[in-house]
Image (cartoon, rainbow, N blue to C red; front, side):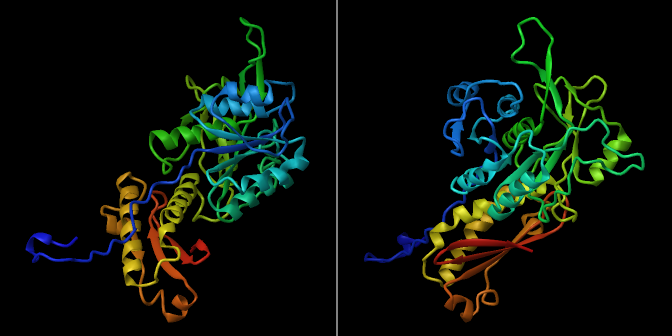
Length: 378
């Protein structure tokens, strides 16, 4: 800002860069896809904020339907807003996922009770392609999780996400039967994905997306369909399957935080979701720069906005480092943006962040051009 007090009276020009604070993107909105009691508006996402809104739109509980239990579990565990996408059967998943590409605020996708790996793989592929959402999936019901030789049975079904855009939870949980007569102790076994999505939303709200959604109570669950021992869970954890455990005197807990990757960089749920949050926030927060003159003033504005945002992320405890300089870096240089790049209407920004776990840099490259913005991960 110009120091007008030291200037002679006259007319002065002050250039204002439109760069401003970057607002954090939302991380707690799931889309729950499944068969509902009322099958109107198939494939159309409907926003719900409470159980009454769900029943008004889709009816209540119905035998063999998993969707209503998942929605109720999400709300009971801390979720406050979700999209419900009704389908007639698994063949409607493709249309549901296409509809979700038009909703920018979706950050999780659940397919309650659907354990067909082919269908689940479509959800994983959708999340990978979108880059800003995470698949919360259910393992197959099975009372013998390991074979006699210690190998896995069928919980994971060969599912894989190279960049960790999904996680699998097992076993199924036991909850009080909401359709039973008052005073009875009837229970029903349901898939855990909706409840886990609620746990994620609860952790996001109470601590932040960098908090692993593990060692957290599954509200509403009174028991588990299968009680894992330590040896069984060790095998499942190694395979990237997140256990739900019940320890003496404790309610059922989410007891795993691994993604469906075979690598190490994106192994943890909180790291994957944190980096997606950072990417999404920056892409949304620097849209002011699209179509702006590509000069050093623009570069400084971008650097200032991104640095201020990442400093807040670090101060929240999401990045590892005693100082902000140790936790992240932002580079917008002539080397990254030579004349050939600028000639294409692009601005390349390189960002390095050190998630709290593991403590290693994940390098992002942000490209801005006259069509929008894009991030690639290194």
